[in-house]
Amino acid sequence: MVGVNDASIAYPIDPSGQRRAPILYRKAVLIPRHLRVGRWSLTAVLTANTARNWAGWRMVFDGGPEPGYGGPVDDVEISIGQSEGRAAPMITLSGPDDMCVINEGLAYPDPANLATSQGAQAYDVRTGVGSTVVLAYIARNVGHLAIPSRVTPAFNTNIADPLVGGTVSGKARFAPLLEEIVRPLAEQAGIAVRVTSTTSGARTLRVASVVDRTSQARFSVGLGNLKQLTYKLTAPTATVVIGGGRGEETARQFILQENAVQKAAWRRIEAFYDYRAASDVDSGVELTAGTAKRLADSAAVEQVDVVPVDTDRLRYGVDYRNGDKVLVEVGAGTGLLLPAPILETEITIDRDPSRKLVTVIPKIGTLSVRSGVMARSNQQVADLLLRVSRLERR
Image 1 (cartoon, rainbow, N blue to C red):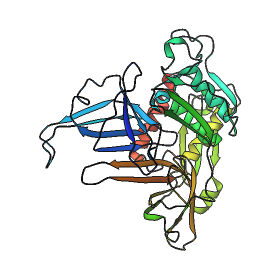
Image 2: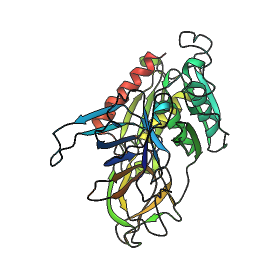
Image 3: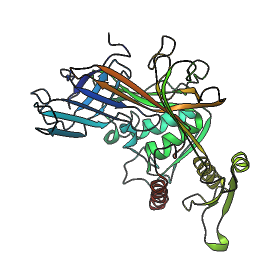
């Protein structure tokens, strides 16, 4: 059996769903992300087993630090005579992980009908327990309850509802399923959503509460389980947000939300949020919720990148994993503690003949669109595109 500190076995899954012989790769990088699409790549010698048309194939990594991790082959690169010190031709395969099956779907206003027959209702509105609402949006748009043309092959969404998470409300109209529906609702409800694969080619949706491991998964120099740590604190981009809804000039609807705690700690930083797509017949409920979310996304961000050292008492893949909430002590005896989820884990598996090494680097931080993923200018462009997209979908 392959252990968490061993190299994963990479099995190709052909377009018909059949498992093929494993690839003896030189190096693989797996990057699972909490509530986001991750990435994977592997580099191997170009052989009869690897030199093929990879369109429609998938890769599943069995065992190792992240068992059941996989995704489609979207990029193929062949290098001949370009690698320093290597005579053998090499091939690199890479792609998104299986969270892409959620990310690549839209949440229809009426998922029971074709895109060209959406006159029955303007929005798909759902309110309830977090897991129930998230499961419904996924199952009805890309899963087993979707119309036949939209069902994702080999993707099992017919799972038992764990009935976990706080009460949430969703409102969908051709919204990107993961980015605008599933992730915000899951963050609000405190649940984790992921997709696992088997070497038989099947994918299964997993929904559960975010696991709080802060009592046992603690990292500090004093405990001897940290090799490297980088801490970053970024000020809020806004502590007061004014949301503008429907209407023009004196007839326009406005709402104000403020983060009193961060305003007192930092300062008053005002921002305007244009939400013209919000309903004007719900007494400001949607505008208020959207403005509150923008305020939360504008909050200060703490992020820690750590290189842990596996010990007998604390091992990645056994005692904690991606998405779990852990506790990091920044510094030595400073009292600065960061309880936060693991948002991303970079796993590097080096199987070069001269060395064999598995490195795991978790990235721990607050659940925010500004958690080090985007530069501020890029985030402003993303916000603008989102607002335009909402107007276009009305």
